[in-house]
Length: 93
Length: 157
Image (cartoon, rainbow over all chains, first blue to last red; front, side, top):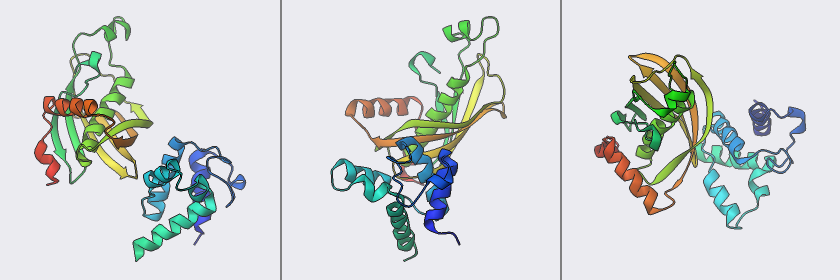
């Protein structure tokens, strides 16, 4: 079974037409990969489907806007994947 | 259909909140300035307005699913296909279903049919936010009444 990162990187590469080999765990989806909010909806849809979860995008966005979280916490891919793993684990609990 | 006011939906025919589906009816006007330009001597409903009719239909479905607490806004149009001409006076049956409900967004599939035949379809993405002001909420309430939005649908039966 491929890792969460591999799956997410493949989703991003296919959804946003970004070369797969440029996507690393340290890539920031917005700052490094240039993904905008609308493209991220497509990615969220694909992640929701692939992992059977619902990424809490509204909550994350609110936290960033309120200064309670940094974009790195949610949009650096290794951090995003950790959140996905948490959501998947919570679903199975 | 009041094209000038972008009110493309005439009435809700069927709304099933539990199944997340909707069917509405919309009659294309027999005369409109749009047809003078699109096209002279060969009037057809612009494809962008067919897409808008699917967006509005999807919007009413999402409003129902969100109990009129949030307003959906069209964010993306995918796989839109104009499969046949729609001409003045034709009665459209527009259907929509929810493909996915995400956090702050939703994706629908919608179809325009005339006499049972598919004329257009699309996959639409919406972002949604709490109603930004009472004026818009009041407008949507009034529109809901105009098109016969079934209030009992909100009970999720």
